[in-house]
Amino acid sequence: MNNRQTELLKLIVEEYIKTAKPVGSKSLQDSLNCSSATIRNEMSYLEELGYLEKTHTSSGRVPSEAGYRYYVDHIMKHKEMSKDDMMKLATIFNNKSLVLSDAIEKSLEIVSELTSYTIVALGSSSKENCLSKVEVIPVTDKNLVAIIVTDKGHVENRNFTIEEGISPLEIKQTVDLINKHVIGSPLNEVLSKLEYEVKPIINDNVNYQKKLFDAFCNFINDVTTESSFTMKGRANILKQPEFSDTDKIKNIISKFEDKDYIKNIKEQDNGINIYIGSENEFDDDVTIIKAKYDKNGEEGTIAIVGPKRMEYERATSLLEYIKENIEKM
Image (cartoon, rainbow, N blue to C red; front, top):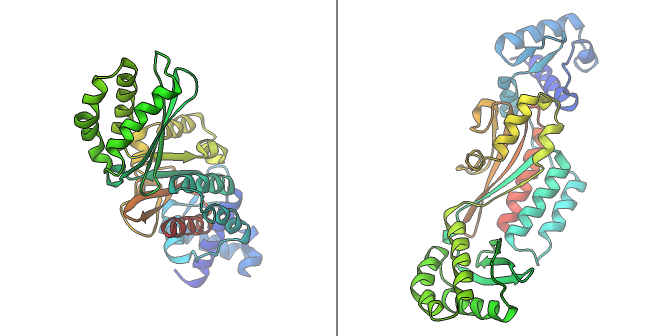
């Protein structure tokens, strides 16, 4: 493509990102300083190349999937974050009291609000972590919250119910026993230690300890066998005009609720990577921008899920900032 055709594609992509409306030749005359007829000819050429598409409802053009890809690879420039965006995220990463999982969750909430896209964080399996803290907090006499913290700042919690009431003292005795034998152990060894070191002691005690012990074992098993994920702004995709169709809405929502689809978002490569439409394994109607992070050996993925008509420059700069600051924590 020549310079004018490249500039034309840039203008159409960026205008369509802003408005979600097909772009006509007349609206581009001032920017390109040429006639409407010339612009229409250039649009036709870009359409022949597969970079633009003509809609049925308008004489204007919209970017095709190939057009977005060309824009991302050859036209888009690195964009510095706005001061407002940076200040909101800096508040999270400057808070030294936050553990890694809390910082990630709060930064996802902010990016979701800033962009109106859906944001996903996928943590690696926690097998590589060592257990540093176990707590069980009674909510009522039958409902409890179990919390585990690893040496790498990973936090997991689980609600569970014990049919028989348990006193705070009984909970403390059981948790102290578990802590005594498993603190400092790699998570993938904790179940074995619980089985062979703690269970024999539990069996000699009253029934409440056995029930609490079993619930805790199930919790540890879940943590060590599944990758954790956090999602913010699940409904944001419904705000995009591309997803006003009922069938599309049902399709996207069902995928957001399917763990297997979410796990497909995991990123293997380094850097900020952009998967447009059919390039991702999630859905042909969306773009997913992913960043893989590595914090002291604990790997994970942060991803922004939105329409193909995504504000690419801003989204990539936000992900770069989050990745860099996670790895600095």
